[in-house]
Image (cartoon, rainbow, N blue to C red; front, side, top):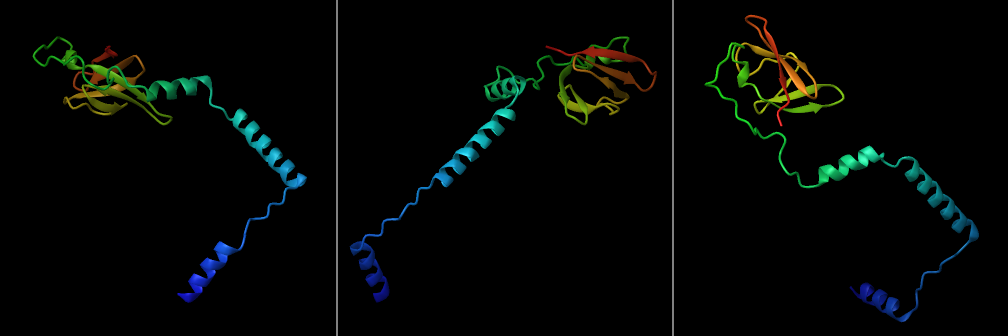
Length: 145
């Protein structure tokens, strides 16, 4: 305890300013380093497309693209074996796969739909092709607004 009080008094009484050494070599090295980092940032700047995506994604969306806007009418059956009940709501693409949002559920190609007997054959950004397994009929459903 006494040692701490003596040290504190020593710090208060004596001037202990840090000594700075400025050298031209250090300054030029720093300038060279900052120039190197600046050019690296300029080379790796995001493209205008990436900037647009980030800007738009960070804004508040006017509507959620994955909320079912049009409810499928289950009572309305057609000669197309009930294909009128499918609503293609959204398209998701990653480097490894494409997915479609149909009636609030996500599907990839080849997957069976919740409605028995139907599966997804082909997914594009604007359409999805659904096949009836029983009679092998297929229909292309456009992306809904």
